[in-house]
Length: 338
Ligand code: ST9
Ligand code: ZN
Ligand code: ZN
Image (cartoon, rainbow, N blue to C red; front, side):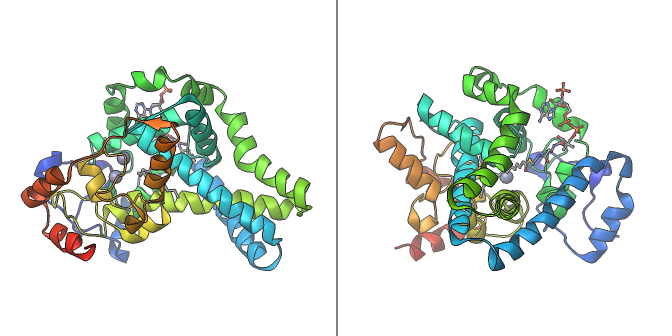
């Protein structure tokens, strides 16, 4: 028998009673998953679109190495950072967790960046993320890591949601999002606005300003850049729910993963984040030492008056929690940074 039940027959135990198991990525598990998959729930339109996107992105990678102008590379890297900040600083730390407050101009900028990332509108992103935190690793978690690495990484975006996700999601208080005019405007006009921002703009600007071939620009600054931000974001749900220390709560899946933190502008310190989700740093240090670019940008915005009411956790509280429920790696980490 393969260890760890999955998919629909998963009788998710209560959050705190659950025994932590490693996410199983063995071939046996993959074959078991495929044999038990309910194919009628696969959303083929999404699967086909993702397949096409990845083919174009591989071609984009080839073009990035052999064909495009250096300005287009620089532009794509810039768009990567903008889209990533739209997720980390906007959809995640501001709109999902309200870990700080942002003035109207900053919210407009972050909503534009979040649109560039094409990861659903802010409202849907924050709603799914709030159920993820409240019901982690149960049927009501949209990317439940118990359903395997692939499901939590990207499979969940090609498969009908578990009814529990929708049922529990309907009970969430989303009034703050409904009152945010920027969030609701983006939701109302999402389809045209996201296509313009994520694909048309990145094709047009390089073509117009430095005479890049339009197809090259679309493949590199559009598709390749988009796919890269997607996979880095998804790694938080897959790899950072699987590999890493658990200094703050050893009974949960979310883990401290420096590789993910590095790529995701500071969002890989996921054991900390699930224990203290209201901390705007999503980490106990929140500076360059944590590769925490997002925290540095929020700090800078607060200095110039664009952000305020930044919430954190005191070192005493962190240490107390680490001593009570951590796996013992907290002290080691503290020593390392001294
Ligand atoms: C993408 C999102 O990639 C990635 C999010 C990642 C999150 C990461 C978090 C990690 C922490 C942060 C770290 C950031 C690091 C960033 C680093 C950057 C470098 N509650 O959805 P439907 C309702 S998106 C309440 O159709 P199906 C819904 O309103 C990629 N209600 O379900 C609707 O009701 P009604 C691009 C909910 O049919 C009804 O239920 N986008 C909830 O099962 C049906 O909803 C895509 O690929 C809820 N939670 O389809 C699109 N959810 O009819 C993907 C739903 O009344 N999505 N409802 O309006 C889809 O196509 C579909 O949602 C589906 C499920 C196929 C997945
Ligand atoms: Zn979160
Ligand atoms: Zn998580």
